[in-house]
Amino acid sequence: MSTEATPEQQGDFDDADTGDGEKVSQATALVSFVLAKAEVFHDANNEVFARINATGEIRRLESRGMKDWLLAGFYENSEKSARDQSVREAIATLSGIARYKGELRDVHLRVAYHDHTYYLDLGEPGQNRAVRITPGAWEVISNPPVMFIRPDSMRPLPEPVRGEINKLFDYINMPDDHRLLLVTWLAESLRPNTPFPVLELIGEAGSAKSTTQQILRRLIDPNASELRGAPKSVEDVFIGAGLTHVLSLENISHLPAPMQDALCVLATGGGHAKRKLYTDADESVIQVKRPVILNGISVSVTAQDLVDRAVTVELPLIAERVEKDTLLEQFDKAHAALLGGLLDVFAAALARLPRVDLPADQRPRLIEFAKLGVAIAEVMGKKGRLFLDQFNASRTDAVHRTLDASPAAATVVDWFDARGRKEALVTLKDLLTDLDRLRPIGAESWPKSAKGLGDVLRRAAPALRQIGIDCRALPKTGGVIRWVIRGRQLEPSPASPASPDSDAAEQDIRTSRTSSAPVSSEIEL
Image (cartoon, rainbow, N blue to C red; front, side):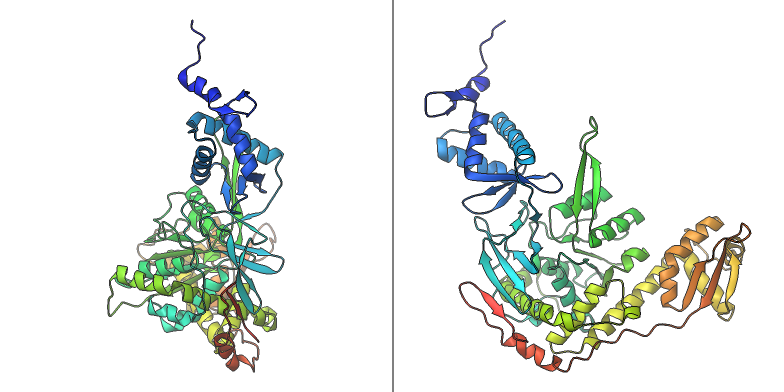
């Protein structure tokens, strides 16, 4: 048997030289090249990265972008092409070094919060610049104190300049009574330290749902694929969210319960674990918190937990159409000014936020979103009451959607109204018998047992309370669990705090200053 090395094996050793005449494997030379040009490290999930010294860019070691950088740099440095096997061996070695010798670092995607300051990565190739946002001011800086990863599909943001966020509505289809909600959602998408509400756009065909969604996505997080189809599994949801800041899904006709649960996790932050390989016991964990925007003809957000974390907007039918390519081209020209206008409003709202308060018994589940919305309304020269009216109207619509999605819960309302809204103390078995007599024709998702009815009531209880029906289980007595169903006084909508200086707030934004180097905007409050 011949022991002569194959051409590939021979080349692996002959292509690299230490400079002292000593031959080393090409994989070893590639490792040395990377360690000389970059810093390798890992994050809390044991994902491995390299920070390029020359540009400050962060790349995943296993990414296509990292491989391309390595191949191009190694060829430029040695005038030799690296073989695929050598690259794989080098990446594997560097991954081990990063996990066991590299430092533990936090890595962010598009937005970050550090030392009471927000950062927005511009994502410019070959540069490391970000917008630093503090209460009352923002500026573009180089080499921010946080590390941003840039997936291959990410596209850069333009350098923001002074502008007006209200100009955004020249390019999207948005009803007047939801515009404050939308601006607040955009600003909240820049705050990674608070929950991210889910934005759902609904409307009939021809209401420009997809175009509106694409422009909103492009404003804060441009991507090679700004609109994506419905994920096929929960795993697909988390994988997609791990590689993009805004998860943007279009033409959603139905979201099964596990998918809605996954979107809840994304809104508040959480993880998804799976086995790396079927042949081992290692886990791969994806830990993410992301803004979500989706569209469809009909409502797909129906689970109460997700409804509480969602803002749904119904878009009107477009009366006068514009070619999509023309509209996007016009938006791209105004992009920098629109982004600057959003940053003006966001920075001013952060300065005003400490003065915003809502009564403890009237705070919605999205309390951070509601308070930011009040602050944004005021800095835009409006009353905080206007935002809360829009927000509460959206919540009321969501409550009715939740009940409509559950025939049994809707029938409980009919049953209680038929009793004259008198308090009832019943067992689930007796209540199910009464509800069966009122069961709507064609109701397929109907509880088949007392236990099933109990599950329905627990899920629908928050929605029922908001329409004046308190429904809860009492402690077991005599081996029997009874439920009490009673009317309750509807809570008034929360009032906004007094803001005597809100009329001057929009003038504060208009007088914000933008310098050329670095770009900045300061807002005096």
